[in-house]
View 1 (tube, one colour):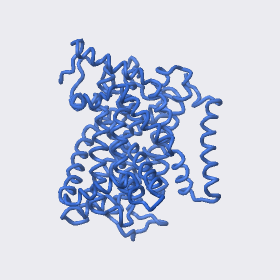
View 2: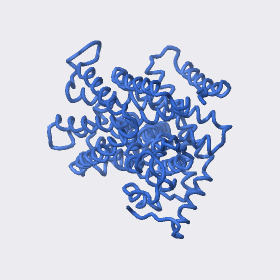
View 3: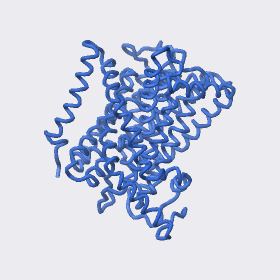
View 4: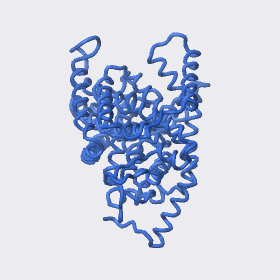
Length: 503
């Protein structure tokens, strides 16, 4: 049965929330540009309450589960590349589901997001990004475990799962409104934020940095021909994959994500090796900056809060722990043991942030690229281009290729997330309606590069904060389920009732 997005009574909660955001903006400044408005709303959403909720839920669930993802670190990686014995349900392999989730995770956040965090929040933002990731591994473990436990699998093998399902089935139908709000925010994030405009904007920015760094070839207004052609090219490529559905997305991601992650790790790692003498000073700047040590008298707390805000926000943008997005893809895995999928996807946070984001941040800091007035992809392009003994153009080209593939796979992953959220909201959409939605998604990919970089990132941050709130509430409420499932799985494993052999 097709039902409304949110009942009028519960929709009022959402509308009141946005009304509060607008009032906050009004108090800050009577007349402001759209970009300035997004800054005010972003600061409101990512204030102390949400930061406390993210860190608090991560610590709570980690203690409830006995820090399983650390205790069984090796198992997580082994499970990632092996087929689960006796698997019965799912649409794609566990590795395919993991790569689909990672395709949406490893993206512009690793390259542009880290650069933005370090430029605005200082080197200390990198410290808080890593702290949030280590705690976020517990959150990702819990949400992916719950996604498999509470998913719905139809007779034809079609799967619907994620936070909207574990809210509905785990917390009960009286919380259906919270599941609906989460789904609405997921669609909004995909269409207006992390899924389309941010990724396309970053790809085109990297292309401009390489092909037309001085912006002399103007097509119309202030936009270059590179912007126009790159935006069109990205939208067409996305259409060719997105219109094929989850199996095509998983197949493409499984081939591209591991390869491009390895290439980028090698390049960023080479920058650090070549500039090894600068690493101790960079680490010192990260640690001291995290606590506002270099701020002027009275400004240490403010500097620390800015570093923490940007580090946690950009870290969540990158690894998506706590946002509830990855569980939507994980629910489609050919799996029957929820704990196993939780361990696999906790490793995704480690790979994404502790390894890839950390490499990016340190490469930027050791080359001083965050201190020369650059923004976005240009910051990391400068680090890669000047951090090794090669032509700056070679470094820019390498970054452009890595960023293009990272951002492109994120576009694909979020198209799947938003389609599943839409299905939860309105029931199984007819093929015509689903195709129309996919084309709308593709159009927004084309639009993204023509909106200011700061506004695009602020919108993405806002939606990330909004989708995190209902998901974190659900994880907090279902912490006992996570604890019980974890204990039951390892008790069965110890008794020999099940096996974790690698196939």
